[in-house]
Length: 246
Picture 1: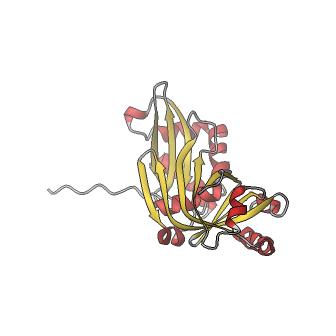
Picture 2 (picture 1 turned 60 degrees about the vertical axis):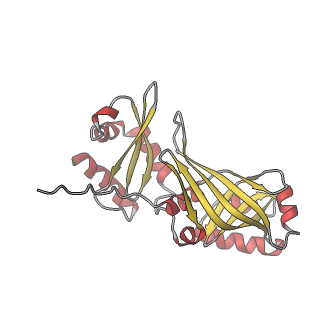
């Protein structure tokens, strides 16, 4: 009898991971040629552009206003777990391209348009000590514990964030604080060699859930795939209980 190839576990693609991480990012750093790094409060990806909320008194904005072709720049973001872990960073992301100033008379209108797709209170700060900058993307890189991968601008612009990006933090915090019984039952599904240590929920997406196992010497991650991709928030609870019953 011929053996069968193992079925690959479904996971978000790298472009989707970047899109999702940008939606959840609370801070970042923009480095442009010849300028001091600028703190980034929010990032919104749209097609091949990254719109960033930054302080309006920075050197990057001033120079970008006079650079007709934009300034070569790189935006660095960290995707962090929403609960307290020994190592919270799940991935690092670098977006490269050329940064441009957004005309002041267009900022508020653009902020309203962004808020329709990506509601964020930090958009209200535009015109009150903060402004918008636009990074025209050439490429992106994402680095995780599994390694680093490059994503071109075309792939990034066609990807969507995970549909549960807004709810992941609430779900993982609730699971960690109030449902340790469910966590322990799911941990019984792990390979035997990673069943010793403190188990914490690390990540959640439509395809599955990932746990971090913390031991005195090292950290290990284990992912459990859902039987089918979730489409709505109500599907998540059902998918988790199906994992327990498997």
